[in-house]
Image 1 (cartoon, rainbow, N blue to C red):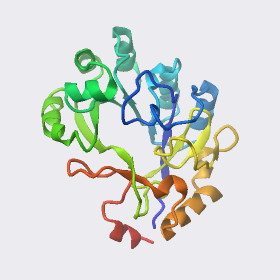
Image 2 (cartoon, one colour):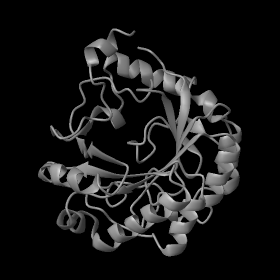
Image 3 (cartoon, rainbow, N blue to C red):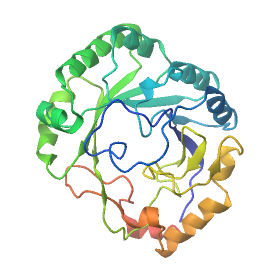
Image 4 (cartoon, rainbow, N blue to C red):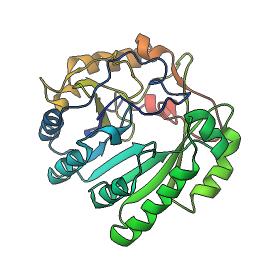
Length: 286
């Protein structure tokens, strides 16, 4: 199976969140200690990653809670990272925060908005109307001052919310630049190889707030440790012994405990993220 070049990192500024969403493992399931990434660790990760093209500044937790998040954006951009992306729940969009986002080198900002206002209230425990007004305010400011900033929304689709997808798209495509849907993570037997250890479209690793490096964002308790960014170059871990062992486990179908029941809910409204679209042809790339 083809191993793509590592050109992307997910960096977790924090695994702390100000919400307790019903489907999120931060609410139930995550037993990692909560914390915030040291800015010096962030600098080391960027300095150790020449040729990095794509940086996702979110994982588990709300990234805008980190006091140095905009310093991180600036540092990555000055180091030559071309695409900096952040997902946020949108609850911290004050006027000051909106101005800082517009003036930052962020390439893409996405808001996690799940379904209708009623679904959003049930799932996330907060009202949508104020968040939507602030998203519109951000849109108006960025179109004047930095129209190249791309705005989007993402909907985590559950078994009982797929009926919201069409009206959701119809509503939000008139407000933001792009609309995404993704299936909710569930626990059920995996029968197919996962693309994450190989790179689906490009190679990608995850650096958690404490420096732990893992192969996949779904590993919310960091069971599949590849190394630590304080001590090692992240780029080297893409070719290290631990990820080679993980690849062999997936090739053979002897999935580790973290992967064996990793799945996504079945819905015709969106494609699965952690499966090859055509597993037969993917296997033939061996």
